[in-house]
Length: 201
Length: 133
Image 1 (cartoon, rainbow over the protein chains, first blue to last red):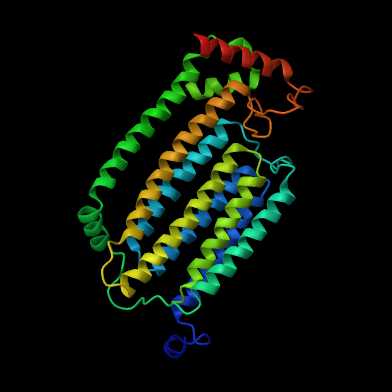
Image 2 (tube, each protein chain N blue to C red):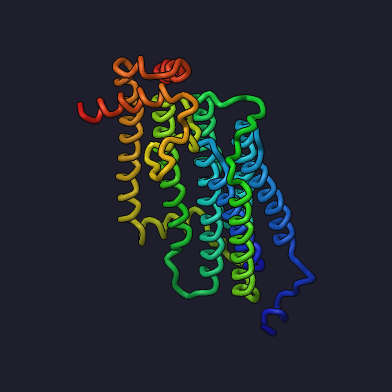
């Protein structure tokens, strides 16, 4: 305790800490807007801000490879997939008043209670722990690649099989609905029919 | 850097995602909230890996490797999830998870008998036909 306080002062934060706090505030605010906005497309766009802010936090933590992977996969493809999903399910462009369900207040109570518990426990546990960001970066591409291909080869290969299975599964799930479109056409609402036609295109 | 900063930010982001999962009604918004929770876990993994790579003697950089695996699994999850949501939307004409109550049990078994009961019933019949075929 005294050692930590002697080495690092609470009242003299470093520039990295200040940058981390500011970006963290922006990230948390964007996440709050993402889960509370009533415009569905805006939620996806605020999610871009959240994920980009997290990429900056990874950079500040010297994990640069993770940061660029985050930008490539999350901001580049996951958000685009989510936007496609919103548009294929004909999400309304303007404000949709029924974006939140009726148990919003119960959800808010659960979230606030768990946030209080988690923050209390984490602050209490790691109050005197400091990350040493000086010296060689802990997450350059070289370091990450070496550890990945020396110690984590088998999970890496298993993950490629999982990705292949997910790819095939997504294709099968999408094609099955199209193949059944002719048989179940009369059972469907006209809105769903138009969406199926859009999906077929 | 104080380790509390990334840990607290990660906890707050996780609880934000938890609120979104519980409070949202559109299935795609629920998927977005799940992504938020996964990202909070990723931030925790990276922060603790950077801390341990300096504090401990021998680490396998397991935090960063697991972060990469989580990102990959999240990409697969979002693909499968969106395919399921689109299939449900094609069958039912809605992606509102409050109305997808076919597996619900209890005394009030059919809560949505007021609206689009015909479409739901015919969709259910069509599904049974698919299942038997």
